[in-house]
Amino acid sequence: QHFTAVLQERSKETVTMVSKEAEASKVDISFGSVFVSKKMYKQLLDEFNAFHRHDVSALLHFWTTGLGVWGAIMLALTYGQINLVYGYAAMIALTAPLFTGFLHTAMVAAFIYTPQLNVDAFPSELDNLYICAIAISVGYLAQDLVHFICQENTFMGSYIAKNPLKLLVHSIYLMPLVIDGVLERSLFLPWLVTRNRNFIIPVASRENVDILRKWIHENVAYKNETTHVWPHKQDATSGPVKKLEDDSAVYASFRKIFAAKHFDIKPIQGMNEIYVTAVGAKKAITSDAVFYTPHVDGPYFWTPWASCYRCLVGATPNKMVQTKFNLQHDSHDQTLGMYDCLGFDYNRELHWISHVPGVQNEERRSVIKLHYVVYPKGWHWYGNLVATLNQNYNTWARGNFLRTLNPAGIYEHGMAWWIWFTTWFNAVFVEFFGWDNLIYIGVCYALGPLPFLILTSFRHYAVYMATFAFRSPPVAHGYLMRDAKLYKTIALSHLGRRLLPLVVLPRDLPGLCLAVTGFSITMLATARLGFVRTYFGSELGFVKPKWIEGFPYGYIPHPMIVGQLLAYSSILWWWNADLNFETTALIGTHMTLYTIHMVQEMLTSSY
Image 1 (cartoon, helix red, strand yellow):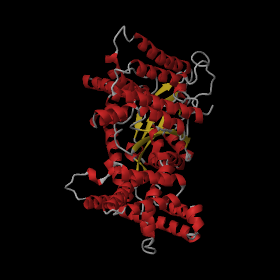
Image 2 (cartoon, rainbow, N blue to C red):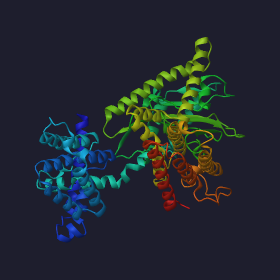
Image 3 (cartoon, one colour):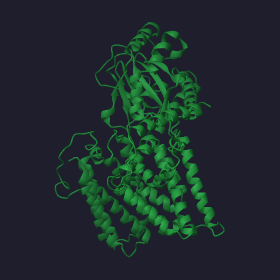
Image 4 (cartoon, rainbow, N blue to C red):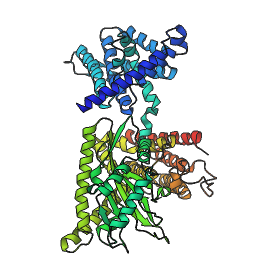
């Protein structure tokens, strides 16, 4: 009921907004407006976009609309009405923007002339009429489902009662409208870029930090292990912490990362705590040592489209302790001062703390740990589920943690070692491989040998090109380097498995030397630049631009890519007679994608 009420309320808001826009400007259907300036189409697009703000909605509408249009075109072809299809394509080409019309015409041509898209490809026992009817019906009904999932109202619902004839215009232009939605989102290529989703900001409600600092000073004893206080169990701390949970600066930072049209955010009070650091030197093997070991706080990396965020608020002055993030650039290490709030993903961000050499704090470091769940807009049941999972895990882990602060018996010592070992193992795996990559590779493998080959051989090119093209919001540089190295290693493994059995020495020594020369040029260029600059460190703003001297720079243009092209060309030339079609196509695709990326760098580089 609450879900439906929220949807109805948003429906009223959207309809009101569009009604005001409609009153402000009447539709111009003159010849110039329709065919020259395309003003009519642009006005229709503005109205349509008001009901399709969600990126997932735009993506799914492309597929559902495509299915329905395919069904309609196949229906026309079944009854020999191809002229209707030509007329439909021509009308869109003449009245929509040039590039949109071109893409729409190409799509219609593909539906007509590609055999795999023709209804004849289906089993003969299925009548063509039924296939077309099913495609049109599923395409239409699926669009309503998409609106429900994305918590958006339908465009049709805004006009159908007052102007039912507009449904005809809406239906005719639906495919180009969703094509424009995809184009406006850069073909969703920015989704390939891993962004830095951490933030650090000063809180707005400083007075509440002052209240908590005073309470800690008066009520928390000095001990040689960390102290953990649950703030909502006493009135003196519950009120100030609640106000910090609702801090306007914290929510503003969230909204820079998680748009209001896509996500809802709410606190997880059961996970919040006040953390007061230990006095004296840290112990070697207790659960306290985990803080100084790279670690991820929670296990729920696999909850899609949702995040649990830990936000650390500095309650005391601090210049000694740094929070480091293994998969972010070093420039994003943070020293959490008083009134600062540092937010990061509880289940995904690898981090640890260290001491700044030669610096000492005058006061015990104290931190308020706040937690939030971020989840898809309107999916409150899912947000509650993710919050409950994280809260239950945090309670369980907290109990184990506290039992091992001062391990006494065999069980406590064993548990302390187990916490340390599992933390270390998970950190190594996340830093160099990643659970998300494991899932992706596993799915690719399950699809079969050819999809596995294609989807794991060329992904690093997509990462290169998308990151180079879409540099803002800030990129998570460590993730970029990890994923690029991983998928390039897999790609070379695919090639090695096919090429190494073909090498016969000493016969192939000349070809082998040529290939090694090409790869050596690439490796030397990488060594000259260093990994940070190799993976766009200058272009992304992590390091200052620097003129690189020494071979191969100054002698070979774009040596990193030219070296690869030389190596692959040598392989194609020397082993030409031994290569099968699949391996030749594989190498050719590598060369093509490297060339495209080189041209991209030449045309769009900042330097």
